[in-house]
Amino acid sequence: MILNFPTFNGGERGQPADVSLSNSETSDVRQTFEDINLEAKSVYVFDVKENREIFSLNAEEKLPLASLTKLMTAIVAEENIPSYVLIPISKNAIAREGDSGLTVEERWPVFDLIDVMLISSSNDAAYALAESFEGGFGGFVELMNKKAVELGLSQTYFLNPTGLDISKSQAGAYGSAKDIARLLLYILKEKASLFEVTRYSTLKIDSREFKNTNQIINEIPRIIFSKTGASDLVGGNLAMVIDRGFENYVIIAVMGSSEQGRFEDVRKLYQAI
Image (cartoon, rainbow, N blue to C red; front, top):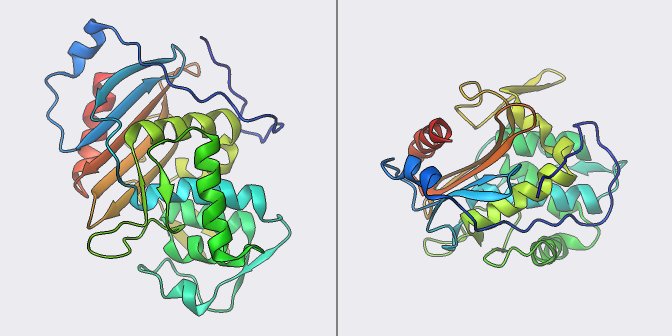
């Protein structure tokens, strides 16, 4: 099945896309990957144009998502928080792990805050978005889980909007590399413009600059969008969509690597596709 995607200028929002992933693969393509030494526990590589799996390693293993969670946070915020709302940054939001440069009591336009959250993986921004939802923090997380069910993400569920570990034994969200690939396929078909900020190395808003947490953003050509994730429980995650030319898209999802190893894993996989 050949899939056609909208250009990155918004476009109409229709019915939910078919985001099923084919399991078909050819032995000659699989052979390309057999000798790659990866740190990741779980990997999924998917050819969008040909609608087929290129490479899979424990792809349905359920692992902590860490900040890959923010992919869903962005979708739910965009769909459920009116664009005219100014999001207040509370003390509770600032208390989240990490410092992305936000300050207490300032107010942000929804889409600016989503951009900050995605490019810099800001936990403060993710928490503030969920906290400002009229249905409350719990209602926002409930919508995240509802969307996961809608998209058929059978290994995925969320306990918070940041992906931060809740304890030494419990993560803030769980999912699989194959589920993340399915989510990226949905984003590519329906919401690519929402994630376009992750194509760039920095984002400047007024006098502030936010850096992309993807360290290889300038090393791999034609990245359409990407998202990092890291936590004590999972190590390092990285997911991205790459255009090999003429809208020949490939999805790469790496989970359970190390904080630096995730970047090297994706480099190796990119070189093999």
